Length: 333
Picture 1: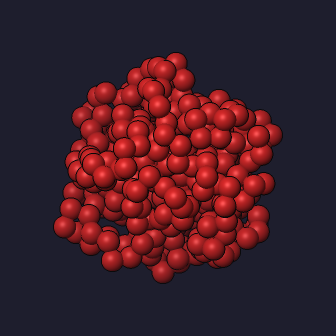
Picture 2: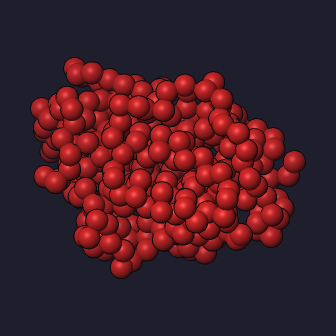
């Protein structure tokens, strides 16, 4: 079967809204199951296409039609509210803030420097393959590919994640609030649901994202197995929920180490933007590492759906409201 890139948007529209019948087997990952359900052949290229569709929609909102009636505003949409609070994630992407960690320095980087939304609407990360936008989006495809258990990742057509191990290090200068993080997670869930992904799987991914990145001082977690357990908490503001078994001291040590590296030999790793948009694509070692504390693996690709995780209530409220009018399609992520 030809990929979405080969057959174009008109043919995509006819394929992305099948009624996904049945329940995902417990021994089949979310990525593998929905690649097969939506694209028939579970190949590396098709898995990459699936992640491109979900990530691009989460970033810029709905751009494929028809869909199952789920409205996705998008991470970059302005004028949005989250639990009664205004959110504006665009400012972290367009270079208007010094929020990107580059060699331990808070820097201004425009991650929409190569076409903005236009190439995303054509199922591409950017217009070229040398821009900050290209590295950001491709790293997001790779990161979520691992998170969702894409078994073909690493084969021709879908590279393994080539970014920074510690998402805490990547995002620490953003000072994201609970409302901003909840909004980000909600957009990912709504995007998946818009392609007919099942409710239980949407919730599983939302809970995994919440537990891994949205809990202040959470223990080191192995999201990318080859990189080991790393400090992953992105939400570190006072309004962020404190993890059940917090390891705040490890985050303090990581911050101190980063400052020391910056003032010393200058050999700190260059980290750029959300989910690490490093120009070289080289994998670096995060300062947090797996020193001390418990570690865990994000449980969204196997038999467990993260039943001990706590999804933001707004995700459930928005998704259940959307599901109620979903034209009878089985919605699963």
